[in-house]
Image (cartoon, rainbow, N blue to C red):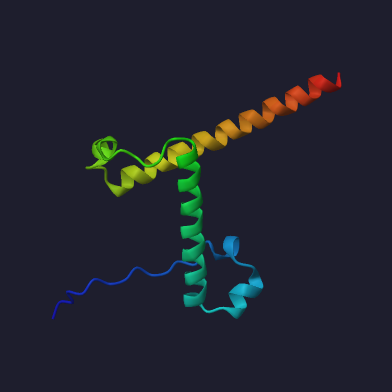
Length: 107
């Protein structure tokens, strides 16, 4: 007999150390931590929406999303990774230039 029911994805624990203190990991069960993680993720998304709204980038016009309609998950992840890499690179450049400015100011 073939199982037709969709299986739930397993909860990965790879980022727990970045989110929870060791004591919390020891004292809470995985389902308890999952609830905390999801509510904290939802709060972060809400904060991002507020930030995007204040910058005029939210809400997004539905027609503007049409070009991403056929985008698959692998491509989307690649696009996000590229943006993240660029953001980190720009942040490092800004830090470098700020350090240079501080050095000039001390001369």
